[in-house]
Length: 227
Image 1 (cartoon, helix red, strand yellow):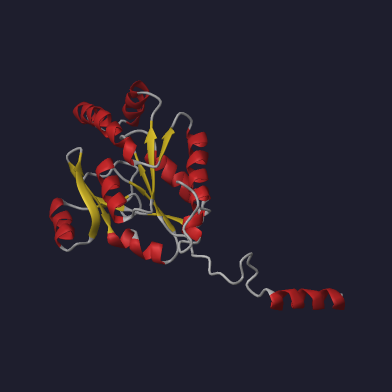
Image 2 (cartoon, one colour):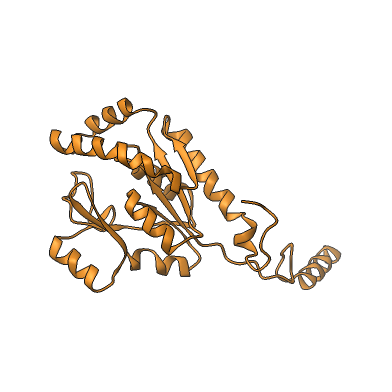
């Protein structure tokens, strides 16, 4: 027992930080993960699934002027504000990005993202394509994932089952979906959400792979990859 303890103490003193590269400071990996796609493809469920399974990921709560749905909670799902308050947030430069989507205003407050990145957290956010493009400019090293339904017929079926919009609002979302699909080329990854569980595992795998990316871990070294 004494010899074992001595050897253990000796090893700990030789490599006190217990790292593979004891002479190198591995950068703490923190980056935003932007999840976009047409309304009804399952973005919210996927973000919630990532949060439930990944302890180092936090959710960026957006601000919006739209009315909350029955199951939504202010401050958890969105910061629900009126247009006057939203305009004041714009004027005060409180938003990283904002856009009008389906007739309502949506935006990403700075306090929902920047403090968590500084703490070394991964920040996942559910954004429309306009917000996604704005975040791409603000965070070029972010991870951008586009989610689609297997078909437009499946997308319409999912939206109708949700029963959260009027018939006119549903038609607007379906019409916008075809336009939003054109923006998928600006994203890093595309996932077809045919089965929620499988899609969630794919999204989590992308996040894990990005955490292991050499250019994130050792930014000063660069990378031999052509990625």
